[in-house]
Length: 479
Image 1 (cartoon, rainbow, N blue to C red):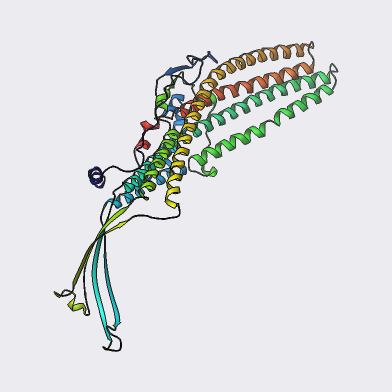
Image 2 (image 1 turned 90 degrees about the horizontal axis):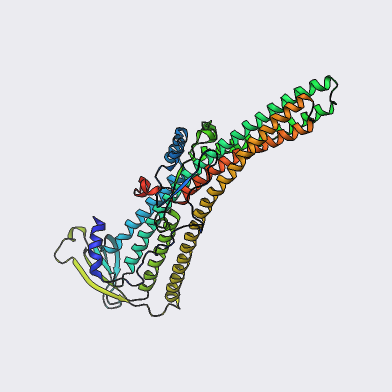
């Protein structure tokens, strides 16, 4: 109701001083990288196809087809303190906007007073008089927004509401991205632990064979000690991996609004997460209208632009209309008597004459702040384009790296089996077995890291493209 009244009144008050805000033009780029994206090489049995012009879905993490991950994300969105703080900040900015609308209404005040006074009309001629004075009065004032300074101030408040709305969207996007990224990292650490345990099992089997050979006198006992040392070295890599699993769990707990003691550990493995085959690539012209950090920078620029009008209006004359009415009497019983009322009507015009350059430089500072916000906006857009380009190229390279790591695992596994057989037959040395063990373990861990990196870069692309927040209630509600 109030917004509608203001919308009707504002056009009647004339144009506002200061520059009108116009959204920065969308970029004309048709791509993010000079190389065509197209399709990645097939790695681990799957290629990814980049669909240009396709928009990001709201719940993009469901494309990983992991119900347990879906539940973790839902829990975090429902209870994350950072998201709650962003919602509160949005409500605060909206309330400040509603308070700002008050400048368009007359300001009315009522007052009542009682005093005892001594009054001497003619000292030395007439005796003084002591009496009680009771009064009731009301005043109404209205500052005409001739130059639109107040309208510019409210425009700035409205831009701050939009800024906080997009900041809330950005918090939501980063939260979902961090949750999925942490789940992938934790699953990768678990897979690395399993690969290490498998390697230790192989080394223990080799130790058993070597001990039998040493007891039979076919190999020196030093071979046994060397393999024991190798096993100890491999086991020493487990605690750091287990620590990373715990740290990922603690991070997931914090993002979900829980303490680590109350977090239920997930047992996800990388195999539980499916790599999306079709990946959207939003057009650059749409990215600047969807990505939260760009929209926040745009509204910051909008608010800074409105501040120029506020500073300009402060340099110009201001006109205030006022009226007052009241009653007073020496007795409360006579406040409503016919001779007790008083009233006043007035108008005041104020023109700043000399402020020591304060108003001039305040306006100049507002222009500088607008220029700074414009540069920050351009830098934010460039950073967003860089991030999208990095992830697009990263996915291409991830597929290539995974292809090489898959081949490395297959080759290392074949070599290990062959050397183990030769060692048992007595035609390979223990050093060859240890080298083969180490190569297989490193290849397996490299494979796990490549799979995780491909998944994480896919997540990074969804986040870089805006995370699909505009399809969710977070886009429109201030609760």
